[in-house]
Image (spheres, rainbow over the protein chains, first blue to last red):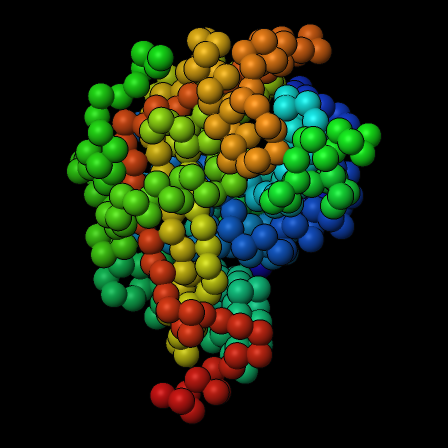
Length: 203
Length: 203
């Protein structure tokens, strides 16, 4: 169904060694299940594009389906143009932020987060069955249980050519995934009313 | 204090006409106050970088201060390298997503959101007073009221050279800002248990 599918299993893509390791090794996230969970549950991912004007970061609804990122977009516009001329691998980033990690020392204030970056080529999905399955997975993610029946290929076919402005379904197959996290205990996080003075008294 | 400050007022930067207009004009957001509010309140922004390996999208805590984006980072790593070699303007994107806009037609399912993209050059902040003011604004954003006194320059000086791994404060001065939104009434949004069947009955 997907000729561009990487033959590399997920665990081999995750944090694989490259010439440039993540700076702080301690923050690397190796928990494959947690990475998959983040990819499945995050609602907006950010795709990095570049063209003659500079870089361009597009927030996207997407679905993590069969170990690839699927999203859709118009056939015209800066995003479509940058995608059609992309020369190298593109980065797709998802992150969740859980709050600010307190320290009584200002410079040690940090962020509790998990983030995942996927790197790979993006291609339009030309196969109607694959596009339909991906869009169906997207509906299952964003509006679970709303539609009683699976998406029909005829509907997707119309959608892809509607209103004189075709919609394209894209697929990013990662050949590298990096994941980082720094998750703090809830009691370490900032909340309104918390003060340095109170924290110094406790310590 | 900031020699690179654009002389262009905020309203002149926002959605200014370029050779490439936003595709769907109806979705352009012209409310300057709403754009400022989004820039002030969003907790994570996404910076688009590019280097020989491809694109690279970094989630960042930041502060919108004196009509610029301030953030900080290590002096080493892919982000620092890509920033120091950046040739063209970089894109910094913030978005808020409020839910999925329902339609009984699958292809018309949409997203309720506001997004802002800023385009401009990024430079390290060398002036200690400016770096201190920006980091103080960042503390006011993420941990309001926690520290009883403003940040001291001596603390920032130490922070910038700590642990053999210097921290750099960066400033992105936008020379273009684009903003889009498609915000739906709450009753148009998906919620768990909502079904096409019920919506069809109502209409």
